[in-house]
Image 1: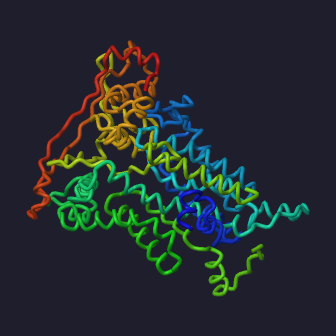
Image 2: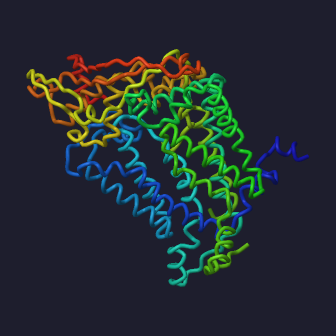
Image 3: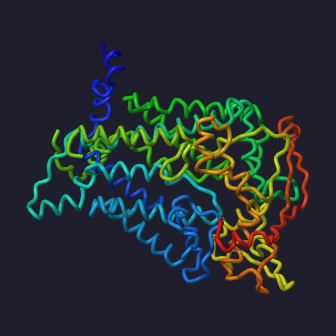
Length: 327
Length: 199
């Protein structure tokens, strides 16, 4: 009966609302908004810090390869002082998201500021980086959620004005976090699919792609007189170990392909293991290949209920309890 | 979202868009089919250009219309050093960004048809020598025909070439090193592109 219903009308079958509309509360959503905004301050810093090399009143560089939305808007020249303003706006909007101050407006401003700053960064040489893809999608999801109505300055302001805020039911607190879980889990899966689409099993077969990148990155800074790489010696050694490369790439592909299964796992230890594996993946990518996704793992906290984390920390550090929320 | 039905609609539309980006290989922020490091072709050799701080601090050797020369570096262009390094060690050598190698590789017939409607193959349409000379001249305020117009940009790099067989045979990596020079030379047929700012 269930499988028939699934084929005729999958949107009426019980499993689909049950997953997206349960498991989190309003406080879970509010706490994740605060956590996300706070972590994005550091994340933004790592993404923008080298732009501070620029002279705000120096020459305006004509981009060699404007990013797609710059082309659409006819933006072909860098305006250095505008970039500084964009960075300040980005940080201000991020803080507002964390605090829940004019939350929806802050989300839109943050999204647009990311678009501008990233657009500038990627248009100098055409190399498009993907570190802001998942955070941007998180902002899209949060924009349509009620994350600004809980544990926020907006909620406090409404109470002071005597305006009642409709209680956030479990379904409203859950669907944004579940949606982000699905996106994060499938992001890894899509990465594996892309590898197999572009290169087939040869991507795994001889570890060749990783070997190429290990050599490129370790040789970037040259060799010492003794013939050793000046930096990234471990990457250089690993590039000469084909058997280890095959083991590593096989593990990476398996991790990526199996990533969506985390959505079905309720066991906390299993989730911790998954997050540790994903974090290790990003740390090793940074150490061995200079792939700068090292701060990305902060988003993996979406697989945990931060209200429960808060409750444990509250007991330990004697913090104030969170306001009660509607069930 | 004031009710579950609205939330369900949002989720359906949102994930349909996300999935469409994956199916149709759209890599336009904030959509992505996550193609990073996916493109791979096995090769017998791995060439690597070695980054040298002195080279990048000096910058491109720019030869002018009036016969003079100057150096153009990241500071003169007012771009981050990390981005200048890409221009110096990759773009002037004809090596485009990874997205150019990913966008048209191993396309299905449906995707190839759609892709060629909207997004020509960068391997056939992107000329990095033109783009570098355009950016240098425009950024420094030089116009074609003026004495200061840059007609050639040069970069030199030490290139090490590794044989994959040497890496894999356990005998230690062996590389052959050679200085390579890249030149971006102005062509008069680019004047129309210049006038139209066609990047």
